[in-house]
Length: 75
Image: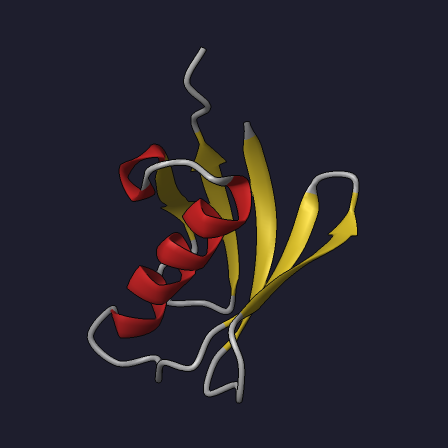
């Protein structure tokens, strides 16, 4: 499944909010330096969907707050 996400960094709490049929807002505590926020986003999405972290990949937007993410669910 491919989905679009909007990332909010330096948040007080980490959370994932569904904002549309195929879009989410992800709030992470990490700062956007050296991929720290991207790693936190992957962890947050994996926890939200209850899947392993390696099942979530950033396809586009690694340096932007808007990203396209691919999520693979085990069948």
